[in-house]
Amino acid sequence: MNEEAKKKLLRKIPYGLYVIGVKSGDEYHGFTGSWLTQASMKPPMITLGVREGSHGLEMIKAGKVLTVNFFPKKAKDLVAEFFKPAPKTEGRLAGHKFHTDITGAPILDEAIGYLECEVKKIIEGHGDHALVLAEVVEAKVKEDVDSLIMSDTPWHYGG
Image: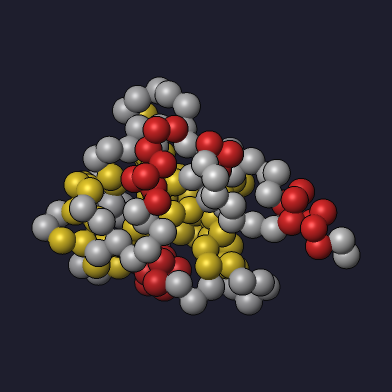
């Protein structure tokens, strides 16, 4: 295989950048996600790639809920804060205020909108990321502007 062509083309797939909020018991966590797509319209479902062995995946397995927090293009630095573990302290994740709604998973107050999801299936063991299939059970748009995507940044994750 032409490794350079593979890497270049896989990086051309358009990826959004999100903060994925998860909850298990009394623990909250957030991490940057980019491998996300709609998987079904009825019922509304998404598929998310989550790194195998990560704390986020372990919490998704245990809690079975997640949020997808959308941010405006100017929020690159905020999303980057969730590349590393995002500890919860005094109602904040990585220093950012959050609240919860019907699933109990964290919704960042600064998000322009969010999806709340219930996990339906996790497929593991077929690569370095698990596939999480989740049903959207709530959605809210707070500000209707273009959201941050990978090509708005110098970052690459894929290939």
